[in-house]
Length: 287
Image (cartoon, rainbow, N blue to C red; front, top):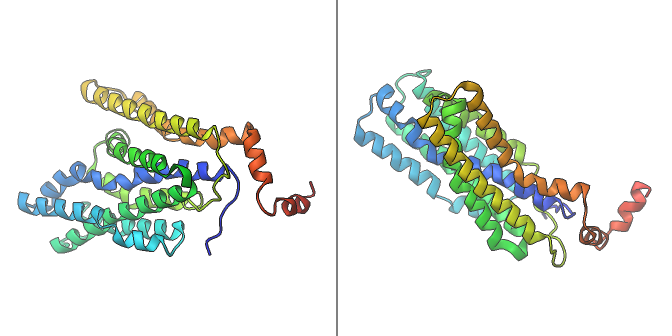
């Protein structure tokens, strides 16, 4: 039996964490950013490069195993498997591209790329299924918001690649092998089954609208900064400022549980009081 975390804030915390995991799940969109290095450094021809692109697509498209596992295991297990696949797959690609290990066979890189991009299926399934269960009355809205952030992941990765990693394919693969699994391991605690709020909450729709608006602002912002970076020669402080603002926009959905913490609504208070066993918790805490 999966333990549920009670309260009205945890589902919104989980949705805010899902935004980060969903952005991480867009790792398969990075193939065009490092494919040219595979061709130049490893000496692959266009046909071999195209077949690696097929491996990239196959990996992120196979989602039946994460779907089956999500019905039997808690979300942290699904995220852990995805993090391991991401580390293993992109780790092998980094070893080859950085020339740390020489003469890795082509078939091994093909399989590694399949495993690496298949991590996105594990990440997406974990956050999508968990949040749809946490908001049973708004499944469609939650699914739309999470998939909307998935569409922004390519632009976010491009921003990181150009600003933070200085257009280095080797650094990008190292970031995918170490940074993405670390992020998902941190988010494992927050992406968890929660007790849905009982009854209708009038503020829920406004919270969803805020999250959707934050994703739209993020998309416009990333598009604008990417164009400016291509057209103008921006100095390092300006580029890093753009990156920091992007991170803050990604954190925008967390404003909802923060607001609920400092300014709880009457509905939230009554929902907590109506939960079974709340009196025992009050007596235990001495209140």
